[in-house]
Image 1 (tube, rainbow, N blue to C red):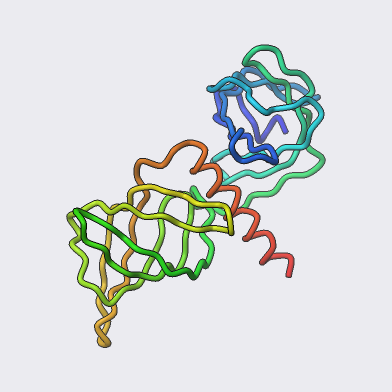
Image 2 (cartoon, rainbow, N blue to C red):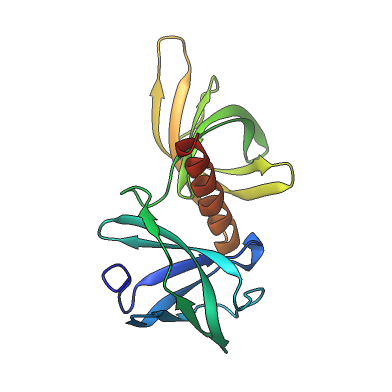
Length: 196
């Protein structure tokens, strides 16, 4: 783990309950694991409970499962994981995600369909001519009770011969909890697809 996790590296920690996601900066690394200082109060983080960990490294997005050995104030000690994996080189895992959504701006509603999503943004298709200069409110329904509400800013718009617009954009005003929920959701779905 010493060659993967380094001092001052930022690591995201996601327990079973997404709402208690947190992140921190690595303080030290040794043969047994590493310690890090959390950015937020460690609400819902429990010693000896397995959590998911993510960190962007020079080799790609690192993922592993481990547990908290010690929790003192905002400093936690993490045990070395048995195994790890690099998910991909891009910052966020992108998955195919087909769902009907609505974009709203200044009282206007535009119907669209998602093609793929990540914690950074999504690609959609629509028949409607959407202004690339505006920022849109959107609600994503990931699962029955898992909703993400945020803003969506368009980056690139392409129109095909059938008059369908394919739009790539990024999420803005995304809370830390919602971002980690999206990271976790996309990672889990990606791994499910790999293991099929």
